[in-house]
Amino acid sequence: MTRHVRDTQGVVVGGGPSGLAVAYALQGDTLLLEKEATVGGLCRSIRHDGGVFDIGGHSFHTPHPEVHALVEDLLEGGLYEQTRDARVYSHETLIPYPFQKNFDRLPDPDVVRACQEGLREVAGGSEREPENFEEFIVQKFGRGIAEHFMLPYNRKLWARDIKKISCEWTSERVAGPKGEKEAFDTKGGTRKPLQSDTMVGYPREGGYEEIYRSFVRHLPAVELEAEVAAIDPVSRTAVTRDGREYGWEFLVSTMPLPVLVRVIEGTPDRIVELAEGLEYMSLRVELLLAGRRLDTPIQRIYSADPDIPPHKTAMNHNSSESLRNRPRHAIMAEVSHSAQKPVDVDAIAPRTIEWLCDLGILESPDDIIWTGHVDAKYAYPVYTHERPGQVAEIKAWLAERDMYTAGRFGEWEYINSDKCVHKGLALGRELRERYPDRMESAGVGGSGA
Image (cartoon, rainbow, N blue to C red; front, side, top):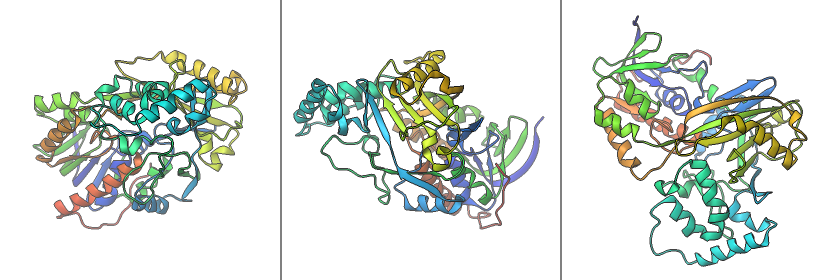
């Protein structure tokens, strides 16, 4: 049975980084609804028997000084910062990340020579712009680097034919080749690719979600375990799975667009078709708990090898001194999958453990005392060539009805949590100006999360 709970000027659906930032900027008569028992979204953390695992967000780095300052201010104890220690596993050895700058450390001279020759061949650049991500890789790095790592890694990561992926996002994500000087910019406002010496942050205590839990006490109102199941744009109401109804003047959703358009009553078939045509990659995160401290400084390992299930393995205990000093250490193995790339989920943990033993990170399989997993259906939005037009038409239809979107899957953008906060703050300020009647500063509080 539906029961009307309250009317509010602004309802924010979703308590991930974007939704929290929107509500923080709005203040006033704002209510945030989160379907889980805690906030954080893909940046939630899981605790098990002394281990701390992060679902999606693993380290904090941002080119937005405002976001860095806000996180430092909100987070009790601030951020623990250290140099990022990431490696690439290639040709049965570990080299520093990224591959394209460190391939000459591989032990096979033929591979090194092929990479060097490929770079020389493309040194002058191409007269035409690449039409897709695969062409971008070959034009940028040459056949050697492309075939020995970049192509197999990205096919493994994106779980599809990467010719379907556009190049619009590459300047922010893909580091240049050896000899091209770059640095991660902490002030420029535009994301740059991570480097081997990038400084990264993490909460001094607890997991990555502590960054986003720190927003809650500064929000006007938060309701947890409040999954929105129906939105009526005519009566301006949102109804939760358990029957609570909330009236709104405007609504901000961070739900994945295909989910959002399905819960909105009266959505035209055209809008549903556009949303369901958006492509995404899903993620299986295998959780491995070591019953002892592991003696390795490595934080991340990236692998293109098809015999190694994860494309990325994170040693989460090296994210902070607090986690490093725990008697049990957490490891996360990320395995992407899609209809084009199914995975044998039962093989992930044993094969990953065997590989970590081969690397010497584990002494034996007996080091792992517990395994678990998290499945994220919507993990990475895919930048298909059609995506900009699809998203623009959906968002225009929503805005005509005073509904707006935010976040990685609300906007279908491959953005990290810091950019989610940055864009969420901007949207919240914009909506304060657009709907000024009751959007004035009010005493803030909020329920715990």
